[in-house]
Image (cartoon, rainbow, N blue to C red; front, side):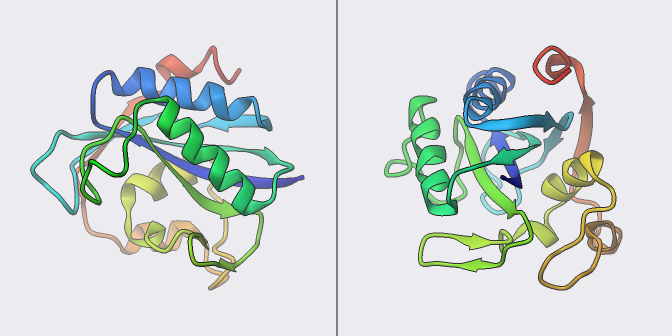
Length: 169
């Protein structure tokens, strides 16, 4: 089993409920899951849409990376995501990204790990280091805290642990 790290985001409908449902469904395929608190973030790329709620979930995984990517896409579809009808970086019920897969470095046509945008996104780095402040980028060997310290403010605000206490005791 390898420890993986997933980014979860939502900005349509009841975003808290979508993130909670995604975490429960992911928990059926992962062991020893932990989830960060929720973070509210301004949209970064397509700014004409509602704010996002974001979290990071970690757990132990037995699946191969591409198999797990398929599983994630199925969870997104089950929670109402339609990639074909929404522009890239547009509003969505749920978005689940594989951020890290153990210490692997993977470059496939449909999957790049570590996630290529994670080092520049506070909405990923803040909940990531909330779960593990010692976590290191497998590509550079630098702690993710260093990347976080280099970033300018991006409109990210903590909302706290609240709804996740029962899910991840």
